[in-house]
Length: 353
Image (tube, rainbow, N blue to C red; front, side):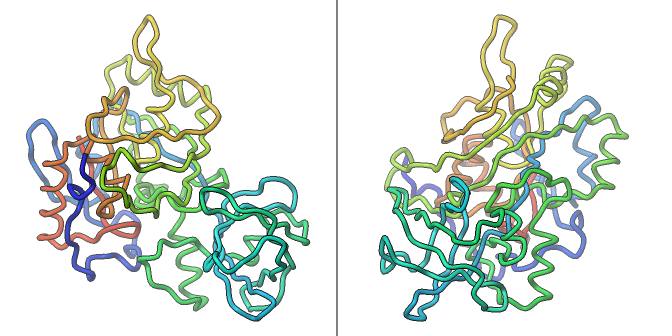
């Protein structure tokens, strides 16, 4: 499939730079695939479109404060993005600019005030563009990032380091149910939920369960190849526990719809779906997924999806086009632009039924 089919023009002023004042105050576009209809609504009213017995699947990954500053011994600044801790003191990171940093070179990692937090040595480069650095300060990486790091906002959100904006993003670029640290980007469809809304849905007979997929930097990576099939996705860590698998399977068996909150939840449950004698089920699973969902993919267990509006030429837009149909999803985008919905991570949401 030609990547250019996922192109569309978005006015710059429709790229959300801040979250809605209240998480559930954003707008919701409801796309009914069977009817081909679009309904404008508010996210706080999402219960109108769900039924008792439906099962919401949410991704409980917790976003790390993964952005950090560093500098070379020459004084040149480096912007860093933490990916994971390979072993004690050994961090896998992305650095920018990366081309000038040499293997064996020592750099300095800075805290939020610009002071030296630790020295580190560049030890290796990966084929995926990542870099391994050996950090002299052996503090737990996650705890250290809470002190020195910043929210890993996508590049289309323009931000300084003013304390009030940092605190805003620390709060809102994180779901209210985040509990398993490991993501370097937020599962943004879940940002719209409040504890009160989740309780309201449960009170109305909608079951809620949690899976974990640690969102990686591939979320920001545009598809540059001419054909979508030639693009490579980064593997991401996932975990679906026995309780989550059981709740999903029980809901399906009783006729409830599986409503995946975000493309990450979709990829998690679709990765874990297997065919048994009794039919398709979601199995407990811990490992990695590099599932790449393109138009033509046959969904196994996902019946509905909550998602934000995605970047052109992105794997996320390819996934929702696979679910809703390319023509319908591009029509929905045009409608959203005409009605001045806000797009991307801090933007409005869409429910695809």
